[in-house]
Amino acid sequence: MPYHHGSERKKFEACQHRLRQQYEQAGMSEAEIQALYQLDLQEFLSERRHRENTQSFAEECCGAHCDDCTLWISELLSQKDYEILILYAIEGFSQAEIADCLSLSQQNISRRIARLKKYFKNF
Image (cartoon, rainbow, N blue to C red; front, side):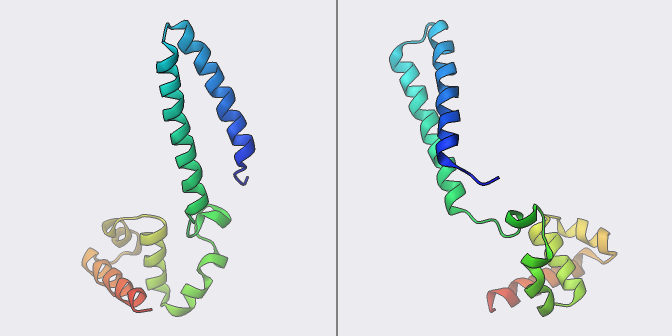
């Protein structure tokens, strides 16, 4: 579901209202409550800016990698290099995990990743 600032702000304000009541019952001063509200508001707005200004490489369309997101890359690389790229860059596997998964040495994976980095750096 896409992010809608208006509805998220209403939820935030409702939560802050409940927190304000709890803080008042706990004996906090109005200045302390307002300071906490401002801190929470800045965090809320920071998260909003992050959502608006950050684009996920593959998670936006299907949660993991999908054919539409990576099809053009798969046409440029060998099948093995493509698998390594997906496992390393998108799935977040370590070089050792990839080596175990593909039955290759960790040194071989390291070389292939270095080659892929160089390839895409010059792309």
